[in-house]
Length: 260
Image (tube, rainbow, N blue to C red):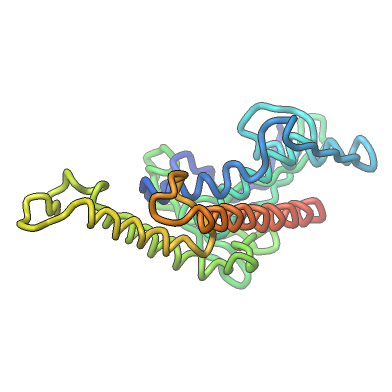
């Protein structure tokens, strides 16, 4: 490659707060949004010409984490990749990069703008520190023109970005109160007189189930120990619906990528 017009800085150590329940939820919602096995799903894309296919493969190349080739696999991997970013932040930003090859031909890439990001009317500001870039550089602020970016927000069909961020904040807070997750901490109530760990655990779990009813997540619990089998089936179907709505939105986002 001879040159490119990328403005954003690659982030090698993107930090997301870790939590047992939150991590399971985001993985279940996004990671298997489309199956991995060719036996489970078929995807057939017929580009207008070979040049267009090569251009799309180049644009989507950075989204594949599995080293697979072919436009169909690139699209499926891109759906998983974009969904994975959406469920973490509630939004995702890509910068459109033009690359000039050694033979003076052009190619194109979409690269994620990671780190702390501020979206304004005319620009996107990327704020990163040394830990995120793996260098000794101080905090940097990079201004990227808004017209150079593609911005996707959590789908309105699932509540939208604002509601999703509020949900995640409350979900993380409630998850931290689950006694089995903090029984070895200094705040443990294990030694308190009359304290019932089993009752406390059940109340905390029910609070989490109530919190996630918006999406229908079953917390990877197939024992029906809290609810009837009827309600468990209802939750399972509702969660599958949530995944379909997210997948549908990401596909629409990819169509916008192809028209960019």
